[in-house]
Image (cartoon, rainbow, N blue to C red; front, side):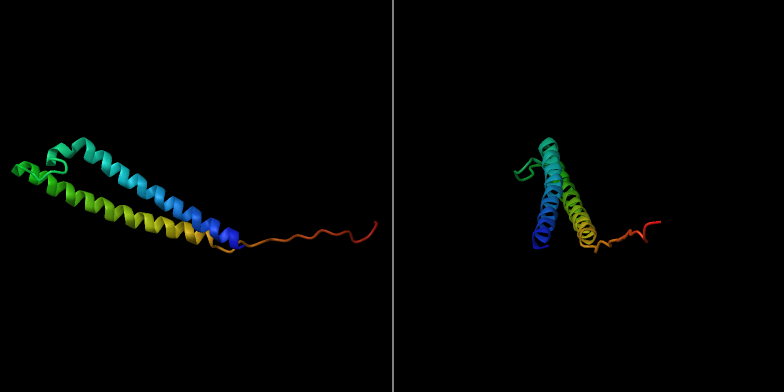
Length: 99
């Protein structure tokens, strides 16, 4: 029983880590492709770069907030599912005699 509990905890932790990796990886790839619009990691030098930087920061924060919320909800759903008590149905067959 104890081994099973640790296995469930391990799988929930691994799933959470994978979903976070998906989310962060997607944001990083977007930043890699379109970061030139806000001068990547450097300070914006034009009004347009500053505008895109503000837009990107707002969008990135919204995506992270939404993604983290959904990850928490999904992990709670999995946790609830994995911790439900399974009901057993026992059927016993017997002979009433030699007829």
